[in-house]
Amino acid sequence: MSLSEDFRLPVACPSCGSHLMRVSQVKNPDDQVHCASCHRFICLWHEAQTVLKKGPCSESEALIEKAVNRGS
Image 1 (tube, rainbow, N blue to C red):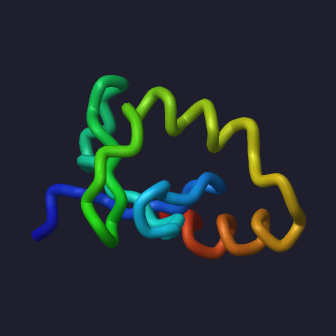
Image 2 (cartoon, rainbow, N blue to C red):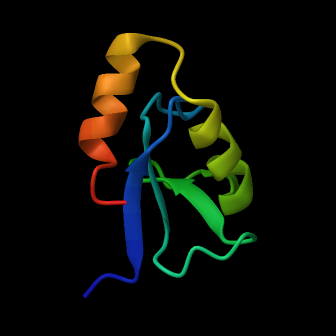
Image 3 (tube, helix red, strand yellow):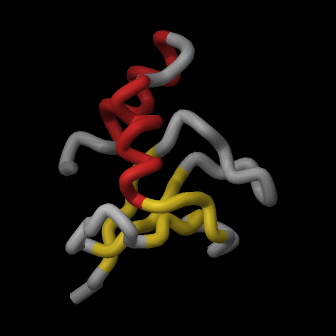
């Protein structure tokens, strides 16, 4: 059983370019979000929520995020 959850951000990891991120299942505001590919620290969960609420910059990004984040 995993204690973390993957989700997609419209902003890519500056190290590897992946959009797939990982956060703890608890999702406290100060939980760290890391790149699911290279494990680089990206931001805090409350910051990621702001980016997710702002939304993707294109329709194709929106469709990808909807598919990846549908379980969230």
